[in-house]
Amino acid sequence: MSKVVQYLQTPTFRKNLIAAFIAIVCVFLFVYIGLKVYTKHDESIAVPKVKGLHISAAIQALENAGLEYQIDSVYQMDAKPGMVIEQDPEQGFHVKSGRTIYLTIITQVAPEVAFPNIKDKTLIEATAILKNHNLRIGDTSYVADIARDIVLDAQFAGQSIRNGRMIPKGSRIDLVLGNGLGANEVEIPNLIGLPLNEAKFALSGAGLGLGTVTYDPNVTDTATAVISVQSPGIEKGLTSLGAKIDVTLSITAPAPITDAPEGVTTTPKPQVNQTQVNPSIAKPNAQSKPAAPAKSTTTNTPTTKPANNAVGQKKDKENKGNSLGF
Image: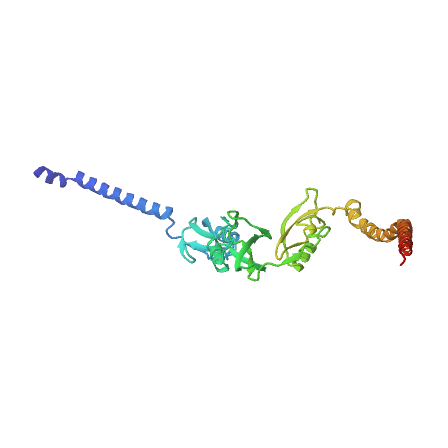
């Protein structure tokens, strides 16, 4: 114990103690200054406001401030695509240069969703189903049907859509509903040779709808194409009010057939009338010719022979009476 106390009192111990203290202070100062330089303790940047800006403008603002960014995207039906809806950290928060700012934007391309089954549903039910699938109701039209406000058909981009088809969220769906008045029949208009817009107008005026539209492979300009085939055709005559007519468009309309069908329907009509008139005129002539000899033969023989027989019988009776004395 005495040796330890004596060592602590020696100049060597004091020198070592001072050296150790200086070394500790130097290490502390080195770490303190190094961390201050590394973390840029005295420097800070206020986060600019990028919420509500388009993503391109937000990126430009962050790059000008010397900040990094990371983007996440979500979908909202009524929001503008590419709009920044959230930022972290918020506006005015002081951060170091090079700090990453997290942005949430509205996706530029809407994700797709499977079209639900809404046929034979009421309008209220169909509206709720479409809203749950992030779809919107477009135009509603009514056709003659005994069921009122019942979805008879659903259309997307002017064409009927089948259940399960993948379409972008936020798409507008047109609904065809029944008016509760029942079905009536109307005459099918002739659409052959009409362009598509005129055919739509003609069908609308007739209370019919446009069904599937197909184009001939040779069609290069749809604006000049005309209808070459319609189904059902005018040969059917009548169809239900609100029915759809499928059409096919080609470069030119088919030429009207004038030989076989029209020859059969038009030329026999005067011939039939003539044949119906001629026999009526010819029959009296045909009967009058044989009638003359018939009358002459029948009138001559029956009239003469019975007359001669009657006279002979009368003379015989008179002779018998005379002979008997009457």
